[in-house]
Image (tube, rainbow, N blue to C red; front, side):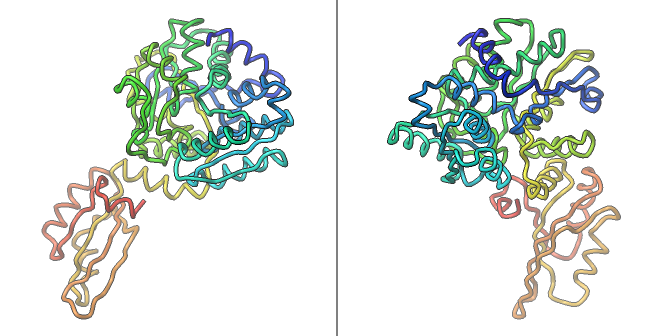
Length: 411
């Protein structure tokens, strides 16, 4: 694949989508002491860049292939791109989604695809859906439309880089790209290394789904043993055979970002910038403070998607507070006597601390009863004083650390 393939993809896309906006971010610019621009792929018709690769592939199918239809697997965004393309081109599709796909994305796939798209929910991760889609294609002769592991998909995603160069009017110092299976990074890298070799490229992965980092360490794509599905748009267990060598040969540095840090950026984008981003969409700007960005430089972050289900915001706030160090959980063994809770409130909590969770089980045949207590601090640095007061308080108190297996019952 070459930059010329990206040019051809851009010509195909010209008839169905326009360039997504490139907007300066005052908040992020102030944070790094330079210019930070956001490439707003969340404003595409399907609210993510995935429309580019899906349409570029399906538009190249022969009449016979279109007649047999297509199948795809997706965490949600690629499926919307396929649904949009199939509706525009009149091609039937079966779309496989994992159960972790937010309801909002499932509904959007069905709405965009209309009568030509059937949605099938299977498995607990993208790779489960991918296996089901591949089996479907083999049995029924339909064309598989990969989310990232196909040169035509990669070329379509590479059009993001082409637009940036045209819109900015000059070369940025750095482009920050979110990474799941590697399609967007591979496509943009192909175009930039050939046409603008002076532009720096940084890849950003979710810490709980760093499949490209694992592939580079192993010398080839391999499935992750453990996968955190929270960043559903980038939670891929295995990167593509097509994308891996492009990233490897270009020697792209990769940065992992904790899921809690991504949640903090999602909230900042919403509260300060008025932007609704999904976890994968906030991945690139969430890494800004972890990247070596010189003052006065020009950086472009790909805001890759905005398909976020509003019902997820409670968990997003929770994860952000925990990552920030303001939310903590404890097991408190209260004496089963009048005034025990009042004593805890008076002797342990600080003036800016707030109890956000209290679950207590009273047992009449015991002297003490356990309670699960969630406390939100006014400031992260207030934790030291809280722990000191707990140490001297009458009840036995045990802190539940964020890396404890018990934490999975809280998030």
